[in-house]
Length: 438
Image (cartoon, rainbow, N blue to C red; front, side):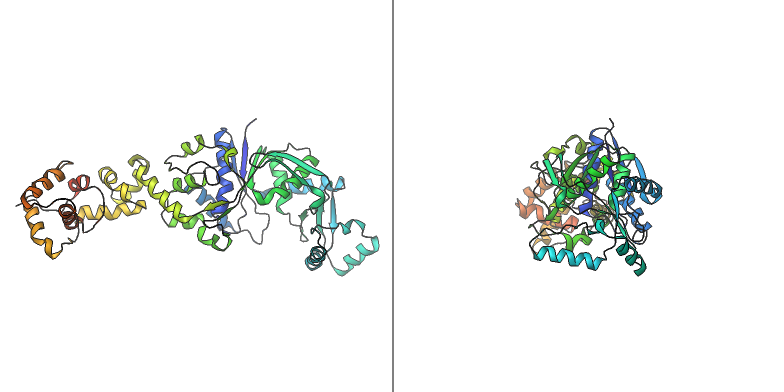
């Protein structure tokens, strides 16, 4: 059996960090098993679906390196859903309901007021011919529901363990809208069967949907996949992320200059007891992946943690992994080795490239002016190497009597205009606009 997973976003907005959780775990499940990962666009809602969001989803996943093996659009498979709907009609599992949204809302409120769980009462099944005719005369168009067997559905979840849902406590799902458009559930069921999806990874909020979909899969003679329901993301303090989700789009993370592998390194461990470790290669994430390590408690996401992890990733990233990007910034391999330990964003390396090439505006305190002039007179002639800084500062120390911070800080500020930065032993040989003694 080839392990096959899918990620099925709706193109009604940008992908965000919550979407990534399902996409990444699905991708890792497939890659760990040497299987197939499907990108399936849920675009049956023609009014709300936008091609710009299809393109954005592809761009975001490509940026992250989450490559797909197969691309599908549900809008191109409508005849397959029609065929399934006809099968369900013949089975007596698909029935017409004529309630308006306002009437359904009133029913739910009444049930809640009575202390009952708001479940559809199946009143549509007992409509008389006269009532049906009256609704049609009013111009009402029905929506179509799948008639569930009111029994307990059980499965072994890869994250939740033994899981069951009593379908008597679940409303018969609406499969087709009043306008004839298909909703997510029937399309997902048909596609999972026909595309051979073996493992479905998605959020905890889909558990009840899974029970209904298992019944629907079985009604079509399909093979029920293995399910894994991951916990949902919350903020660092346990707060809901819903109000911030726009600022947590994958596009915004890319625009901020975060490294894809940093984002993935965090999300691949978030919700497990395992430490979050910086990874610089996708294969390391695959090798360390075990979906059974994920827990059921809400996973806390922190932008500050992500930014700190991003810096750690850069500190360990070899030049070969980012050479094309660094070439565009004018950053050499030697400069990258010197400065990467001080970066929070890769693009910051360009500032050091400009400093190395053009020099810096010296920052010299009045009380250090004489000392710096004395030190510059002792600076050896080029060429310089990694030993030059020590031999020079040793000579300056002997001549001036200064040591420690009083010795090194004025020299760093005079050469770079900054109080902090890379080790000067590595940086000094790269500086092109520091005059030697003369």
